[in-house]
Length: 283
Image (cartoon, rainbow, N blue to C red; front, top):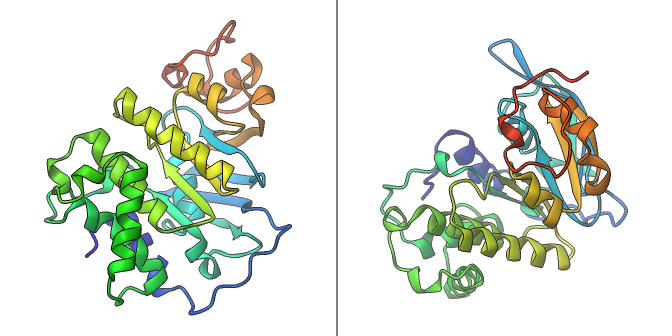
């Protein structure tokens, strides 16, 4: 049962059918993600251009930039969900096709068919298919693992609820639990905080920090720069091209934010609504 449309569906299917029986051993010194010369175009218009990026071995990474900057496209390109004009992507030192079992993905909520007749527990159990195969049978151990993941995000009491009957924040928690059920080493999250309440935002942040403590890598598209400054360790600034990347303390400066978002120089505290600054090409 696949309940994701378009890109997300392709990823779930690829994560199972294309995974070889035995994954390549993870090289200790290889970065979680390395991108070289990544370019993507829609209808002959570049949306990402020659992006180079190497994810740090530890720490939460936020992908930041204005609307239309290519943040979600960057995530999808790294996951092989959109065709590349050029570039290469490696995960723990190997092509993505050999590392799919090591990668988890939380798509935007808009990519989900919430009317699909499936329970929260069944959604989370789908995260186990990367380990048992698309035609494998979800067993008791997998259901127990899925229920434990629901419990981690505070949704165990809603295990039997149809996903369309959940609030937006609850739905997002369920999809986070599905990603946890994959037991991945690298997680991509596309705006997991969009449209959620404060309690859900805190629950998601707690899970991200727990993943970081476990030594797992998280690359997350996020708009709220105040949260980025407080809870993330590294930032990738995008505006079609890469503006810069590095530690939060070095990236969230008025000069770099002006290059990323355009408009006048930003003085004082980083604004939470910086994504509303008009888009301008990088200088």
